[in-house]
Amino acid sequence: YKPCSLPKLTSPRETATAQLCIAAEYGQTATIQALLAVNADPFSHTIGGLTPLFITAHAGYPATVALLLSAKADHLSPSPLWVIANGG
Image (cartoon, rainbow, N blue to C red; front, side, top):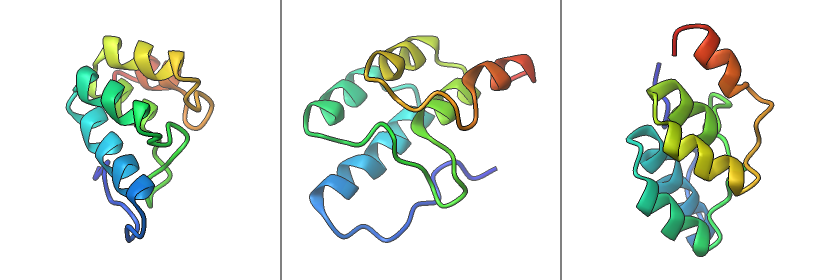
């Protein structure tokens, strides 16, 4: 399980999006708020297809999950509820 395997970064938005993935892994809610404010993409995904929402749900950070859901993050692939139901 390597949640933040990211593609090559070529723009400031992609860099912010990569930072969003890493912040999600560690439940850094304030950092995520700041990154979303500068257009980090909550619909982004890692090379393996994991979204910031999936990563933070798997890591067990409910406040960060709530923040990403309020930012309309992709909640369908894979589902945070699936993560919780499977012991995440």
